[in-house]
Image (cartoon, rainbow, N blue to C red):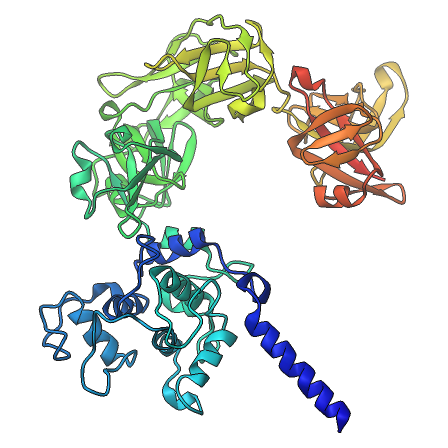
Length: 611
């Protein structure tokens, strides 16, 4: 008997302790920023005036907006309660909430729309959204409701604790955010009713949610803000926060009214239409300038269909949306679809003439500063390796103009903000080119490097005197692939020599054989050219045994920076297996790392082997 009393007392103490624990101990509260973004994107509530008490009318409107189709509620047909006349701003929401069984009046028949929403009332309304009614709870109200409210973790982040405690707007934000991941009476996450899902951690997938609630695409024209049902509070252009005036004609815009946010994209592709697939009756993709783009809007599909104005052989500018698909199509002369890049090769290519026939034209393959390759019909000679600009003429044709190499020398600042006396523009495009391959860089990748005229192929300044385009001559080595040779065999000599290589690049196995013997015959290597048919294999340099410290490899007094795409292998039983940085961190000092060149020259740790 004493033992039973002891365990009963212990259990009671544990339950009491759980009730007294702060939120961080009893269950981590979600990020307020995430909660605000989620409920704002869904149109349930906003992140304004979070410390204010929330009224019954406001909370009821939030609850209705949290239901499928709840954002379409209008004015009530009649006054739902004596103190909620039809003219009241929330009359439609109150009427909808009553009809859906979310709320009832007080015993005196009033609703008290301006009264403070109490925790017990708010919890009961949210439980009703999950499918529970008072018949599901035993005992006196609201004991069962609050117990269920806590067991479903609807209380995470909510500061109100007692049944009669008033809720703040912040409490309401947390309560509705928690509702999204809570399971309904039938057992499914509530967020599924709104057409969204949870992420791997069991919380609302914020990116997917905002994507799903985003409207657009629409092509921006002069006065584009007047087309929106709200005044933008935030505007992003190509991922950067900007003033609304920074949005230009022919930008593709998306928006979320509840978040008062606009996202604009200025990505374009100009060239002749080379293919429309699967057919012009119902096109889903289009090929322009040697690249194929998925069509992401009905307007673009119509423009490229047999009902639209654009046909095979026409030169157009594709206005690309946030996912890189075609949001709209414009005349080539109507927007600036110019590109700068390096000529990779010239060839003769066959094109459709739009009348069922074909023609052959000289074609230039351009590696542009966005890291993509494009093909343009071009007259005149353009040497491989030359820097050119693809320019749209008045008639809509695309012409390639050679650019004179520009001299630029200087040191990139330690924070990657400046090169010599020039600052980098916010949306600067930097392309490092080597052996017909390119790597797109961010300014911080060049931090601390000295660049002379031999390393800078070309650059351009914007109207503010900032570097907006920079083409480099194989400065970083990021254009190459890196891996490890797992087997090498050589037979014969001279003209009869035969070499066989097997090597791994990021978990993909390759083999190469022939009369060529590369400088590297074992260990970690730099692969020049296509890994399936390499031009050269260079051995990497081994650093001393060391250990990982953040994004650095520490070997004695030396520090090496890791490549963003460092490859990690684990050596077991004489064989190499692809591994991860997490495993390398666990291994401590049982590591060896290899780099391509000194960090002061742009080099990085490219391969790590866990012993």
